[in-house]
Length: 291
Image (spheres, rainbow, N blue to C red):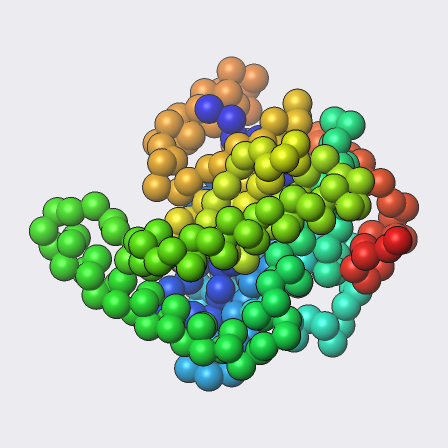
């Protein structure tokens, strides 16, 4: 089982909301090491914090984990702005040590280029009709509340987790059509930028597939699916689902690998540098919508 990756991408954690799986994402990040960690938008839910959301200790622990990754493993962290954390517009672009906060980026690995963006910029509802986006967010929040109630009783009866909102999305034809169109538009954008693939979040639907010759990747979310994207050192991408992780196997693997080389506690191994198609100073420039 791999526990070290070149790059890990997570999105849509929505810290500050009741639905955020903050404890789970922290536990996930403790199991793996990576050279690059990309937080692809909606990490903090500023919309909910302005209304009924609340910031808890478990939400702070998420950022404590990020800081430990930077300090202990020299992880390069990129925080890309999403629509729910659009308050970051006030400080963009910003780079402090191994932490870079920006709108989007072009990532190059193993001879391939990927345009990485949260994805809301391609959503006409969130960009042009903000009030409709807020109404939709309220409806989604209600579904998540109802989802918690349903699963509370399912757990008591020994039944597995059931995602009510994903079920509703799957049944509503207009939602399915929207998602398909969204993914196709993103694929077109990647082609227009001369990229081999595109990596996004936003719609809470994890994906790893080809669309008209473009590698389309979506990291999912940490509200329902609890998923992340990971790239190994050969350039292969995979989706990792929290509910499918065998934490015991990971602990045993890490213990035996360090025991074999005579190390009682896992050490810090040298990490290779990732290559981007821009200079270091260019990495923190505003959106890469250049002709």
